[in-house]
Image (tube, rainbow, N blue to C red):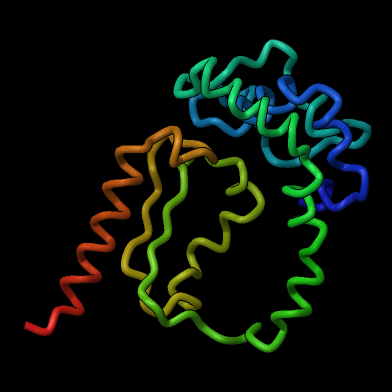
Length: 175
């Protein structure tokens, strides 16, 4: 995430949009072999694109037509806007400092792919979710799934969301 905070971080993605997206989808997909999946850490002298093998393929759930839609959208809009989210992390923290020690008390659900590379550097926080989410109704790890769980496992994600909403509605029924 800190790599994406550099003012020019989006440049390497915009040089070859199709390659950047193909490598990004591949590196974080649950179907990518262990020895080729990203760890989320970038070696010194490398960048997000160079870390991924040139022969990276599209994930099994990504059709050529769907991929072309991504390429068209990012070719038109670029990567600067999406990466600005990472650049604003300190600003966002400062603007929300007044809630830093507050717990979230609304009904919540958490879902992550078992093979999501983000878990390499953030996964240790999963065990403490219930401390901060005081009404955590479910915590689901999708076996074999990577970072793109809504695309890798749409039926399972949709079912979990609908079950969460159904159970929340049932628990709030007044007769």
